[in-house]
Amino acid sequence: MRMLYLAGPDVFLQNAIEIGARKRAICAKHGFEGLYPIDPDVEASADPEAIFRANCAHMQRADAGLFNLTPFRGPSADAGTLFELGFMFALGKPVYGYASRAGAYAARVRTHYGKLARSGGRLWDPSGHAVEDFGLHENLMIVRALAASERELVVVQERGAQALAAMRAFEKCVAALARRRTKRS
Image 1 (cartoon, one colour):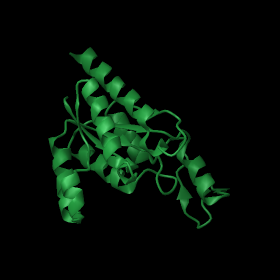
Image 2 (cartoon, rainbow, N blue to C red):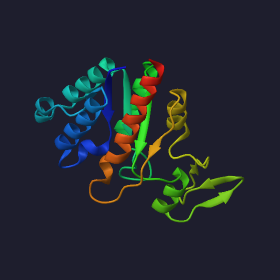
Image 3 (cartoon, rainbow, N blue to C red):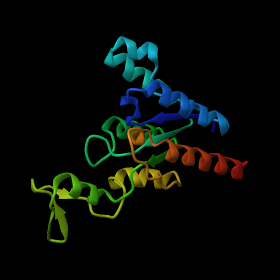
């Protein structure tokens, strides 16, 4: 395993290019090539089709994917990142997750929406929609995809303006992947 696709909501940060360079440098330090989804030439075009095709090509080239599952714009991970995780999982490639925010999904839904009701053994949000309450960090489909890759989610609590980049969790995830690769060699 050499090439790692690096996905996450950190691409929406103002310093996304710098974050991508730092993440690629961490990958290189551990013997990997990081494929960051922002290509300045493609992004500058603001052509959604070009961005989509470029990212799909990166995922197809990559040996595995690292996904920043830090909640973004709500209690769950970024929708685009979740698509990419599913895409790579469907390709049969290992998927690994990391986040800078600890806690169970149901607790984040509670924080986001306020009081949840318990009825019939399930949690319900104020709109009457069931809330997954398995004690997992994210939706069960995401957590089970990580488990199928024999990897748990790496969470390192981070605060501040750059917490969305989850740099400490990312580095810990890449280091664990490098140790795992060494053990299998």
